[in-house]
Image (cartoon, rainbow, N blue to C red; front, top):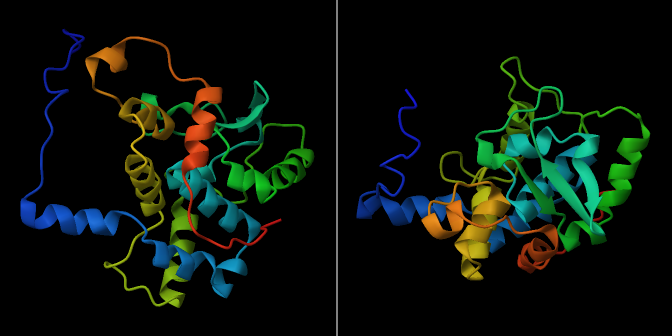
Length: 232
């Protein structure tokens, strides 16, 4: 009823039974050998540019599948000389999970070196209007990632990953977050990068957000031992 602005349950966290927590955590992220098996496979290399770029956007930025699939041409800009992604719901049909999901991220240097901006320029040149970058269309209920996730599941089938015992497209987000955790990045910064609520009262309610110049080297620290193709 909005009678109070404070949620007394903000600091309450439910823990899973000890016999389940470790098992679920292991399944949440992609292991290095699994990443190599997928991203260096001929089946993946043969996929469309759209499919490959969306996968890399999730892996190197922690984007949710729908956040990557629904990106529009105006969502890629330059701030203070740094190329960034605006995760937003301002384009036609775009949706966000929460208010905190709206954020601005520096593009990872690995994607810059793989010529992601050449790909973006090609798509932006197709129309002067703010159009979706990728060719995936939202489902009838407005889910942009529906077709991509089905296609990704079929790819995993081709590569002999067992359904129910394998990471998923969403697991790229968990992998990115775990990489930042292992690098001991400040949690308030990780929360801003991935669009989570940060509950700590000092950093969560006071002070400005980190700017893109501060976030750029942090995002670039995430590294995977992969010999990646040039998608363009």
